Length: 309
Image 1 (cartoon, helix red, strand yellow):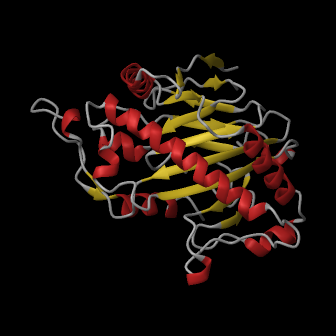
Image 2 (cartoon, one colour):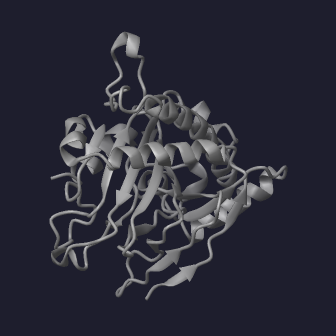
């Protein structure tokens, strides 16, 4: 059995930004994961998102498949995604629904797929409201990350990373009962996230585990406990790369616990054209940049394309 891990808790309502930034830095260096409280996202809105999500996942498979993933948006059925390439199974147990950056429907540049308003009259507006609110929270967290790196709080804004950022909302459903043939399979197999930061909220059902030492053999997995009203925030590979591995992008997975599980992940990544290169405060003559510069979108798309069969 995995033991539990005590992750740092960052209060976004704190008036002491320097202390909050120091806490975020310590969390990113030591864990790659932390909790955020007083984040400004209304609990009723979160409940509405979960209700709409459950309503969609309760549909018959043939109905859900009408919105099958295109342009990395829409429905992804069980087994379609394999986050751990070394897994012996065909794919992970979860099903999910992706919502990408929302374009202007009048200009017909919104690539998202939406359930019919007849069946889900509040679905689209609920998701749009949640995305706008959690994006604001994510930007505040990135400001603390910048301060923790001895940068200006507006660093990510000033370099254009938050001008039309790449944002994806992912609704997730993990099955309760697992077939005998799937014994040992994971709801989400071991992986690290690809981009900058992820803001996760769950229904409280356990299953999320992290492995803080990627190279350890055997790996040590620890349970991430639920805190009511808090977001779980983790950093991705792109931010690890940006910081020259000062911050860590931590392996995580979701184990089957014999109970249905719902979660909502919001991925906040830089503008597609943002050039990610080593931050000056994260390198020195003794520790030069480990990675060449790369455009954010090029890096993330490459990672996504390797995940789907």
